[in-house]
Length: 88
Image (cartoon, rainbow, N blue to C red; front, side, top):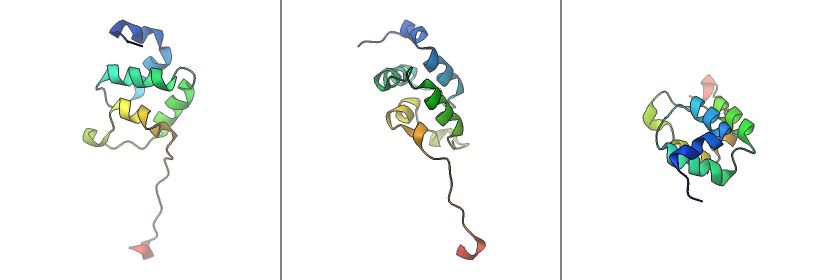
């Protein structure tokens, strides 16, 4: 399915997700990934997972939006391993 820039309005879940995603690059690729993923059907899960994801403060370490969707990173756990002082 070929997508056009005007098609974005057909995907309100994508618009909401795009609004909270911290890196605004390659919107067309992200929309294609959203459609391939059937993002509208699981939009609330994607948005919740995006809000809980531990993004870096440095933009270069934040994945492109399409990569985030293609790799289902919204399902990744936000837990970081805890180290005791003795381990250092």
